[in-house]
Image 1 (spheres, rainbow, N blue to C red):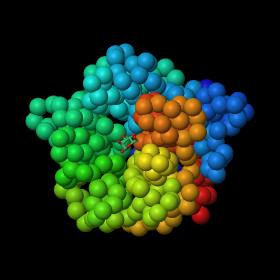
Image 2: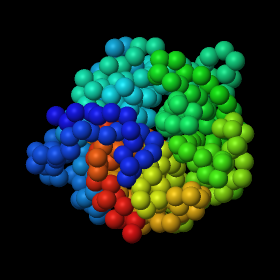
Image 3: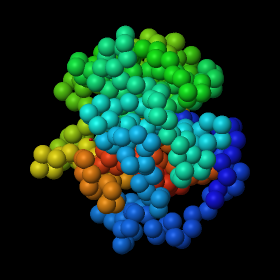
Image 4: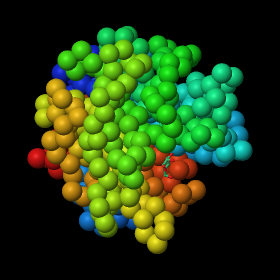
Length: 351
Ligand code: BMA
């Protein structure tokens, strides 16, 4: 079993949830062939999707039945490393349908998750009117300059969804900071560093008749402006033609910022969520250098094809381990799962 290593970010790949191992991770043939949780054949690489990601054979890593309290579903986890453990920020949907963000910890990032009973960000707190209906789909970015993590999440209220921003330095308590802007916005992901003195964030407002990915800059992580529409839903029948949204916080590579994003297509009125990849300029992250033509990951395993919302993979967390990208994602809005890829293989799609 790989040993989870210490703090410093890999010199080659730095970013949101960076994790370094003292041992290199060796993919056993069993893991290569057992992705898909009981799928008879290798579920990746079929149906026109390039065989880049391999599912953890332990998938689903977490289901509602694994929680120490009653819940309807657990999904769409933010991911990072803290004190030598992988920390997931789970979206837990309660039996009424409201979601809160709960912390889960595991030494190897795969097994033996310890889930907190009390939410880190619970919906309906007094004074936080714009999350009366839920705190959903957290992403988490370690910000070295601030010495803490920033959590970007969907604050859901009768006014619609908005991007909430909170901080934590221990995953025991979180402090809410602000909303990025008004509602009809989702999928906020913060970059871990400044660009020419300004912080940068990606988000997905429902604006101009489309659901595209936009960027914004800020001098202080509170006031956001200088918008750019950077990655659009494409037209017509494309796999990302209905909407797109950022996945985990971008990862800095030698080629630029690697962004995993979700794209949506409607088939017979039903929305299918897949994941694609894009590369953003290292110094000017609102400039898109490349974007995958097709999806790089899609629902194929049984736990992705059926559940509350079938045919959904929704990546929200990433941890870099050596040359591997560990992508944590929600499956069918019902489970928390993990798939791994060589970073070089993901980047190769973009070259
Ligand atoms: C999006 C969000 C996600 C969800 C996805 C698929 O719009 O609401 O929380 O996982 O749809 O249903």
